[in-house]
Amino acid sequence: MSDQPSAPPPANERCVCREVADHLRDLLQPRSEAAREHFRNSRLEFLKAVRTLIDERIEHLSATGPSPGAKVPVE
Image 1: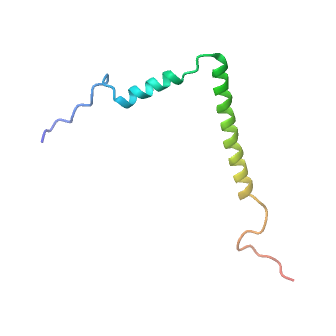
Image 2 (image 1 turned 120 degrees about the horizontal axis):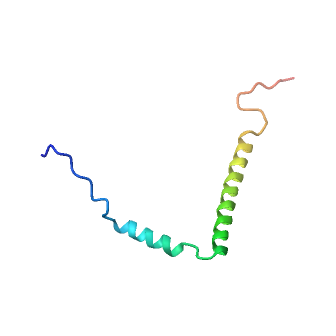
Image 3 (image 1 turned 90 degrees about the vertical axis):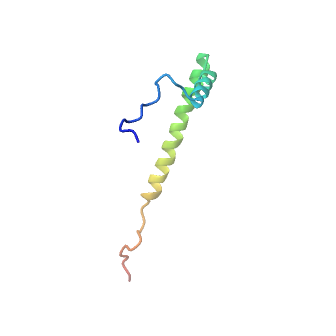
């Protein structure tokens, strides 16, 4: 065994996955202003949908009604 720690890989060495990801990003980059606006709007709509799901879940969990184990008056 060697007492010296192993050297990290060179910083300029790139893996195949990174190369593919770079090419896909370049391929899918919107070229026109209309495409950029469409992607921006779709991101906003996605976030609004997530917000709606969260709001619905909060409302469901906060629903008023007797909780399990709550005392209920009996006549």
